[in-house]
Image 1: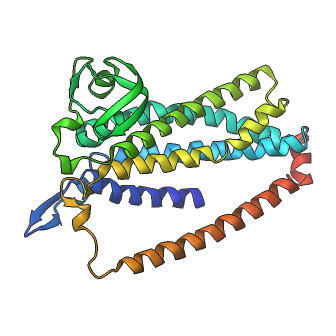
Image 2: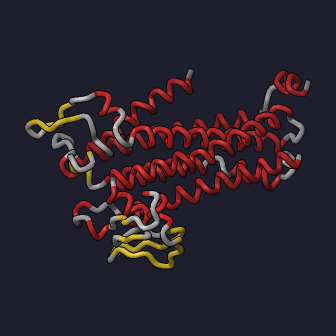
Image 3: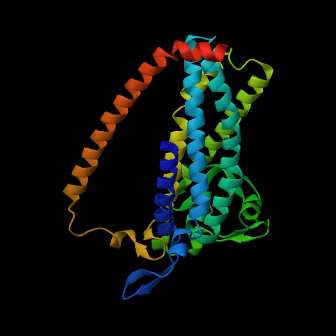
Length: 314
């Protein structure tokens, strides 16, 4: 029930955020956006690609969490039937959802961004001048003054093909957009590419784990079990990098091409009130994460109960 409730909540959160990315189902009347179609507003062009990409990211996070905790138990008790069973489930499920997260769902979402938010797409891909046969940048060091990439490794034509299905397709670069419509170039590029690197890492680790499972060596290698343990927070980091890409790439718009961030703040809220709210929420969440980690560590140290171990062993 918790998972169902979280999924329903995620749907409506993403519906609202996606409308801010690709607004639809409205008309402008005296400077106000007024709803004309509830269906079009909810199922706006970016809603389903973003929802599926986000939900599968959550599933990857859950799989790595389950695998890492199982590995931690096995490091203490290599014979634990519960940890062996849960690690096997996490690896099989994790490999499936890690692959699906990248393709098709990550690819579909990137194509949608190319079509609906071209300035964001140019920023995340490091495309600073318009090009046909646009290359896919595998690695680069971005600079913003002037916008340029250094030490870049790229595959010619692949970005045009991935975005539009044609290696000769022209993709607009940052140079074709007004200066005050360009998102933060360094942050958008770095957050996106680090998210992609982590996504490829998840596929590699789960494929490696599946190979070890097939060979019968998954539960024996201490180094690999430690790799699963230290990988627990990485999907969370990838999710945060994805949100940084989405929100930084949307700038300078609060609602894309409709309402600028500079015009969206409340004049009744002072900077001091905002700062106080941020500090207070940060302290509350810091306390909660410390409590969570303390209780989680206690549970892991205790391990599965004897009844569960006996049931699976039988």
